[in-house]
Length: 148
Image (cartoon, rainbow, N blue to C red):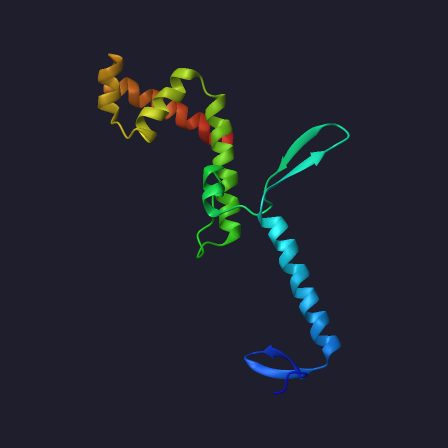
């Protein structure tokens, strides 16, 4: 290889090209690097007419930033259809729970979210376990009708 020869490396092999092709390839690579740097890095923009400075954040978010923003990610082995159905069901459940009275919501919260037994809830409310069971059945029936 002499000094005046130009090579591009494709799949690890040197390919001889003309100077014009080599320079165009390098220019395109430099341009891509420049634009990627602008996309990945936040910057300040100064408006001299309006006398303002605006910060333009990066257009690329890190995994940590997405987690802080409360993004959720599907498991790799989970089909997108299943994710969408589950998401829809969760949204419907949230709407259904909001339609309940406050004490009904509290009963469901204690039994299903805090994993308290009917007997524990009954003791806290000064009621019998049978009364709590009956109320739970009524609330679950309301929720079932909401899903139909």
